[in-house]
Picture 1 (spheres, rainbow, N blue to C red):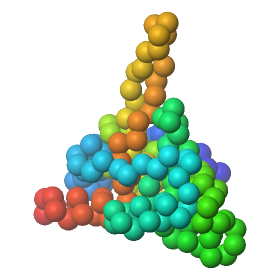
Picture 2 (picture 1 turned 90 degrees about the horizontal axis):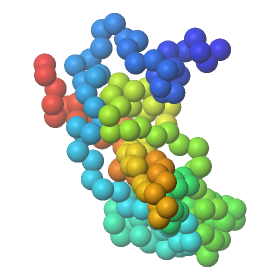
Picture 3 (picture 1 turned 120 degrees about the vertical axis):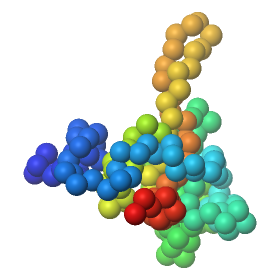
Picture 4 (picture 1 turned 180 degrees about the vertical axis):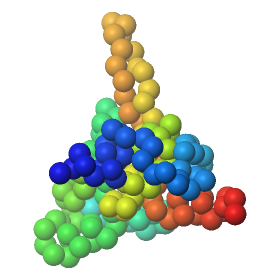
Length: 165
């Protein structure tokens, strides 16, 4: 079962240190990756416009975030094109019709080891930062802000550039 799988336990935040012989980068924090600010799409953006924006800006994927800040999912260029060409979505449909709504999130304080475990199964992870917000009556709530999108290539680039060997 899943609770006997160390990688699943790390991905879900139940375990921190499982590898006895961790690589040098295992405990380094995600914030050290120096990710660039992500391109964010609002849910009403059409599939056609999303394709144009992603191609023009040179991105393969982008988070879809509601005006409220709620992270709805990820839209990818390949999934959008495939859905439209297969007739499952129209160019005029909003990107919410073609988003991946199951995605992994990591925080800036999470380790690259945890990120590595996530990226073994997922193509990307959304890097989030929690921020306390206050409304007019003084009550507060935690809001997650999208800080970046990280891929296995980002991790590999960091490791190869900073390899201590």
